[in-house]
Structures are given as structure tokens and as C-alpha cells.
Length: 55
Image (cartoon, rainbow, N blue to C red; front, side):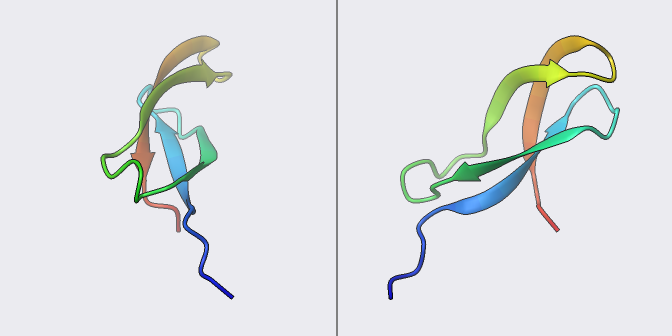
């Protein structure tokens, strides 16, 4: 069987709350690190989430 092209990455909040989402990313199609605005329930706002290493 072929190896999966997608990998899991942690999207960590830049509001320093420690809240994160886990997303799938295809590194062949998107080689740069992901950034997206999503909702952080701890500060109750939409903030920037940046990609971090999933342990």
C-alpha cells in the first residue's frame, strides 16, 4: 500500500492560551507553514493560529 500524503499538524493559538486545533495538511501541495484565523474559546475571539509540531 502507498503511504498517505497528508500529515497531522497542530494549529496553536497566538493568544498564548494553549488552545489548539489539529488539522490535516498535504506537504507536497502546500510546503509553507499554515496560518489561519479561527475561534479561541478561552479568549472568546477569533485569533491567528499558527502551525506547530504535533507531539
